Length: 128
Length: 164
Image (cartoon, rainbow over the protein chains, first blue to last red):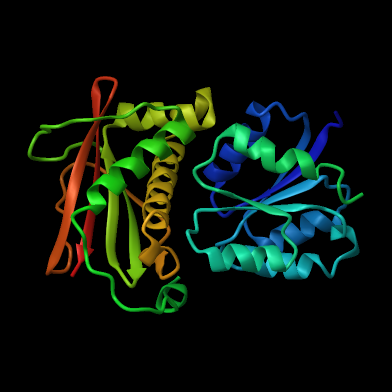
């Protein structure tokens, strides 16, 4: 399996580490993990190119996950990069909105490494 | 954050004693899935909660209140290590943040199990108090409950306080 370049977007540094750990525990081969603490920082990372997948929180300061998705759709570098939302939100409306503006799936916290793998694996290489 | 919290519409939801079971389920699930920790409920816990770290997450919207998790330093360190890997426990800031994230997930999991809350109750970012010499006062009238769990030889306290 191809080694992945992953972008993890969350305003909590601890949560970014938890997500990275879950990806590794799930047995996914990770080449590089980039981190961003909000959507605006994530857009900067996306423009550097060659990402395989993005995992993003919804509720973040500065630029939330939904606005990030809308802006990502306008970037050439973002085209074809699948985004999976990771959220504590119980709100179906926010999840549905995320899916309608480009997210390819979502993971609800709490999650297991197996659940992360289930969501991420089908999307690897799907957009390229 | 306040603008997000003020957005929640809907009719106020009344506190229900049956939520205690839902909270217990939410807590066990979060600790198991995120830290691999098997919590056992303590049927007759001490009257007073204790522990060096208290994480809090506020709820606002159709229900206003707070969820807290309180535990000792060793327990918080162990949980952080289980969540993040071996060296996490060497950093106090990381330990506090990990406990805050657990509290955030417990609050999110709790409200997602109650259909009337899921779409109309917002959560605050977590806050963590370190130290034992404090009293937490909430606006009256309020109702709530507290549950104690054992984790190895330590206690983990989880409480819900709802402003009524």
